[in-house]
Amino acid sequence: MIIYYHKLLYVLPLALITGPFIPDLIVVLCSILFLIDTFRLKLFDYYNNNFFKVFIIFVFFLNLSALFSDYSISFKYSLGYIRYGIFTILLFYIFKNFPKFIYNLGVVFIFVFILLIIDGFIQYFFSYNIAQIKIEKYGTGLSYVTSFFGEEKKLGSFLSRLSPILFLSILLIKKKFNFEFSFLNTIFILALFVIVLLTTERVSIFILSCFITILFLKSDEILKSKIIFLISLIFIIVLIYFTNTPLVEKIKSIFYSTGLLSPGYTEEGLIKGGYDEGIFIFSKFYHDQIRNSLDLFKENIFFGIGPKNYQYFMEPGWGHHPHNFHAQILSEIGIFGYFIFFCVFMYFLINCLKKIFLYKLDNVNNEIKLYLYLIILLNLAPIPSGNFFNNWLNIILYFPFGYLLFLNEKKI
Image 1 (tube, helix red, strand yellow):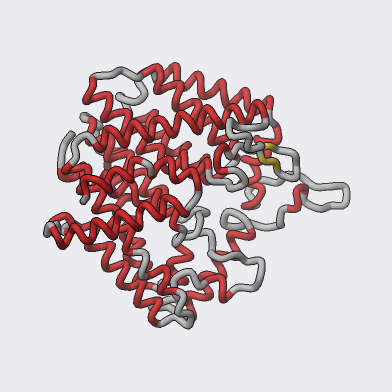
Image 2 (cartoon, rainbow, N blue to C red):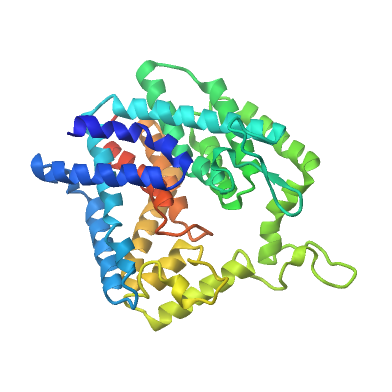
C-alpha cells in the first residue's frame, strides 16, 4: 500500500498553501495507512528512536492533562496529536526506503518557493497576484504581501519556517547531480529575504534573519560569494530604509511595543501609535498573555487546564491561545508536559551552539543537520507564536524531524 499512498506527500508543500484542511487530511490519511502498514509489515523498529520515545511520553501527559480537564473537548486535540509523531516516522521510512523521494520532494519545495516568491513580487508591484488576490493593507496604508494565502498572514511563516528544507534540498540535489547554484543561491536568498520583509510578519522576519546569519557565517556550500551577498544585502536594507518608511516603522514597532524605543509623543502628551507606557515582554498584549498563563499554571501546576482550554478561562478579546508555545504548554498541559518540551528545546539549543561555535561544517550532512537543529530551535523558542495545536503549523513544525531521523541514520 505504501508504494501508492506515500506519493500524496509530494502534494503536501502545495497543499499547505491552500489552508489547513487539505494538508491535515493528507497527514491523517497517510498516518492511518502507515499505522496499518506498521502492524501488517512489522515496522516497529522505525519507532525505536529517541524522537518517538520522547514524543509518546509528551502525548501521554497531553492526554493525562485532557483527562483531568473540566472540558472533554481537550481529548479532540490530545488524542489526535499522535498523528504528527506517526507522520514523522512515515517521512523517515519513506526517505530510507524510497531513495528518489527526498530529491523529488526537494524539487517540489524549490518549485513552491519560486512560485511564492515570484507571485509575491507580482502582488507587491501590481497589487494583485497571478490568482487575482488583492494585496492586503493595514489601516495605516502599509501594504503587505500574502500571495495565495489571501487574507491570512501565513506567507512569511511558511517561507521562514520551511526555508531549511529548501536549502537542504538544494544541497542534496547539488551533491547528487553535481550542479553549481552559487550565484542563483545568492539571488534566491536575497529575494526570499525581501519577500518575507514585505509580508511584515515580524516573527518570520526574525526567524529568517537568524537563519540567513548562520548561513552567512557557517555555510561554504550555499553561500560561496559572501562579500557579494553582504554588499547586496546591505544595499537592499538601505534601499528599503529610504524608500519604504511605513515598512521600517512596522519593523521598529517591535521596539515600540516592548517600550525599549519611544515613537514620540503627540501634542496632547500621548504616545504616538497608541503604544502602552512601560517595559513589556514583546508587547503589553503578549506580556499580559504570558502573565495570564502563569496565573493559570499556578492554579493547575501538575496537569494544567487541558489542551486548548486557555480560551475558556479568559475574558472575550483575549484570544484562543497565549501566542507563546512555552506559556501555552505550561498553562494547558502542566509542569510534566512542559518539562519534556523544555528539555527538547534545551537539547536543540545546546546542539546548535556546539555546531555553530565548536564544529566546522566539513561535509553536507553536518551542514544540513545544523539547518535542521536551528529551525527546530527557532520553532520552539519562547517568542510570539501561533496556537501549539494548530494543525497547519504542526505539519510545518514536524517536517524537519523526519529529515533529522533519516540523516542521523544515513550519510548522504
